Image (tube, rainbow, N blue to C red):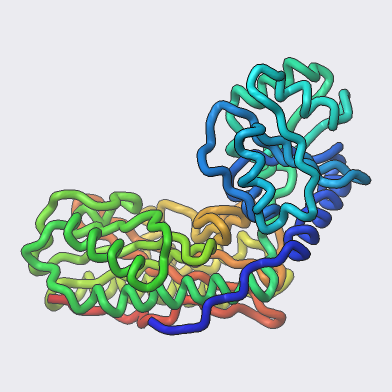
Length: 375
């Protein structure tokens, strides 16, 4: 697969993100944000520690103050070379010093702070012990839309990741299925994702026959047989942004029922996609897809939400689920992936990543959604 290498994000990009996050904290009634190593820190600063250990590393964003990255002294040289480092003040601490006291000096002693979801419990407890008057809210709850709206550069990266996943599907449909284990096909998928530019493979689900009725089966030692329906769901990170697509193929000619179920899921996926437009609540995408499956008599067999956001992680807000009233905004990216799962028999799922445009939606996956026959 060919294509130009996307331009890296600049120090100004990261500075703007940190400023935006600090403003969002104020709007949410927070005294600031505490961001541990992980996807939020990567998105805000471009910094990924070489190893996440018991030593505290935390980005402190408080309104009216420059961002501060608290880091162990031995990791400070790496942090200084992060893409967003010029917009940060580094505050390093040496072994034997109290990192929580270093961090506490930057915080309102009675403030409520948003804290990244993947913060280690020992670090949160250390901060609470040092500053007993503070309280904390997980970023998913306090600022669920912080990373949800992508800019043009992020959309380009997500589109490239989607195209790489599409290229993977076009190749996998050419390989033999019958007589091989699910794990063999899963290895093929992982190899292809890497061949087409992925640096990280997050999942390769290969659910054949009855295993396809388990949405998160992943792979096993079952030998794929002629006559099997096979759910293929795969994705990971390419240039730091996620891919995630699902197609359901059939080994040999399907039965009339199998074809009918596949057609129902395809119609549901189309209905979910057609519901995407600015201002519509996330739950309406779920409702549109679910109505098709329910009306066809298979509602009890659609057992998960219709979609999840995607960006620097493959699962993040917003979620296309009943009860989520967050309006869709241009630049949001998420999956639309209805399915039908018949226990002990087979499953069908079809998934595209979709981005909200000014007047509707655009798919970032464009392989056929028709039934594909494989050998």
